[in-house]
Image 1 (cartoon, rainbow, N blue to C red):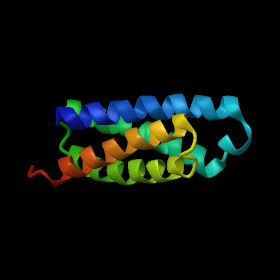
Image 2: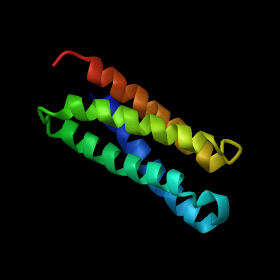
Image 3: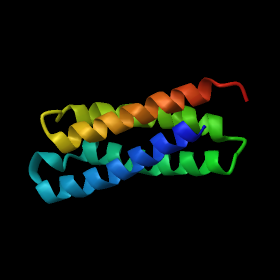
Image 4: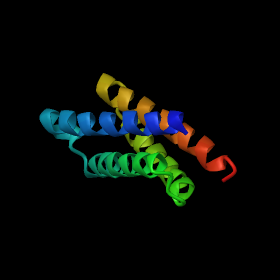
Length: 108
């Protein structure tokens, strides 16, 4: 569980930093689909980590949803994979999605 919590928090931080970066860059970096994916991922990864830390009975369900949102964010970020910041965010979100999928598959 700790690996999943850590991956969620890394993804959260990366999404927050990437949103700030995108706003500073302007232009194609401020795409509404991209920003929406980053905002969704930032929020759900933090909430998922919080729920796991307090051992919520809904944590596994949240991990499944978090995996979907993080995967979507990683895919959005990879559309700009030539940008190092976007690529790093995609990698953090992919790692989070993988950890959440593994967590959700564990027996309760």
